[in-house]
Length: 123
Image (cartoon, rainbow, N blue to C red):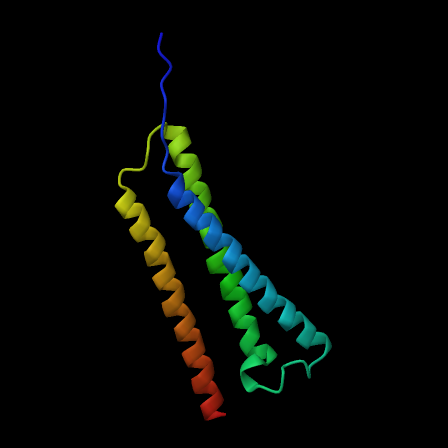
């Protein structure tokens, strides 16, 4: 009896893992800044962009969508290949999913930044 060997696509898992770590650090630092501003309201570096009302949406979106979303996709890509004992259908589609998720973060981040800037100009 011959033992079967499986070769999985771990590159996409690593890409999502690195993105999870990066966005985790960004989201937690934004949360730390927001928490400090609750205790010390003057800790906004005298810049209107870093006030609590503008840092909180960055923190929640970075943690919920970027950090948790990347972690979920990392787990799916890791476990699905091992449960099915097969590689993903296409490495190119996996990479498009990864970079499409990055594009989603950029577009949602610019949307949040644009709304906050517009609100600042109106008020």
